[in-house]
Image 1 (cartoon, rainbow, N blue to C red):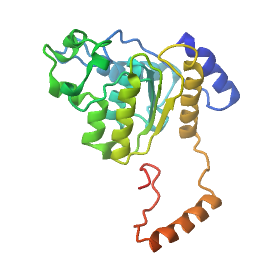
Image 2 (cartoon, rainbow, N blue to C red; image 1 turned 90 degrees about the vertical axis):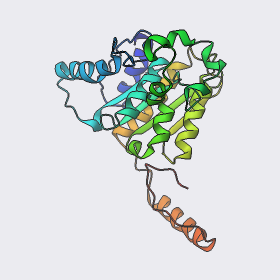
Image 3 (cartoon, rainbow, N blue to C red; image 1 turned 180 degrees about the horizontal axis):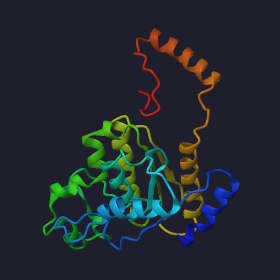
Image 4 (cartoon, helix red, strand yellow; image 1 turned 135 degrees about the horizontal axis):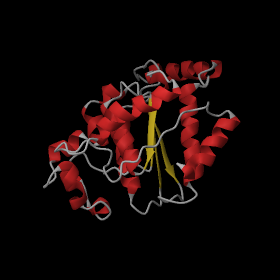
Length: 254
């Protein structure tokens, strides 16, 4: 929290984002999961305890349109999973260098993940051996692949450094491709030269907050010039026998 405080302060002071209530509950090495055996319930804690606790003293309404979730590394994984499982609660999710696996099934997780997250670390969370079905139910890429339409109204920001020493660009790129292939609009950034730690995280957090600011105050990017351009392109598409789709900012243009 303190590492990013200067970024939060400068982005608010500049007017790029409005004043926000930002809370960062620690989850140890829980992956912010409800453990399979019920001994720890971190996801439930975030939704049922932390959110109401934060809103009460700040006099915040429980309004989805102004409720966002985000995180870095393990927090990036946690926020993606929670938002994808509960898109009715959050307007947007911002994941910086999320610690996600490049797989839809547990048996597809390779050595580039297992060297820094060995299987024994997952036993308390997913069972021993790892319950593959429970893992899939909580894997962001699998959730998005299985039922993408549930995420249509969730704004998604995903980024990672291309020099990440944990190879997290593999999982982020994999999730990006899943979202791309199912046609879900999202913002994805592969940050050139950035690693998992260090000063690059400060401007990267500022970029993420810029995305958040655009959700709170959407820019008027679709102006007359855009509409005229689209009309001209549609004429060319019709001439080429290409079906014309109505623009939907929730979906990728096909």
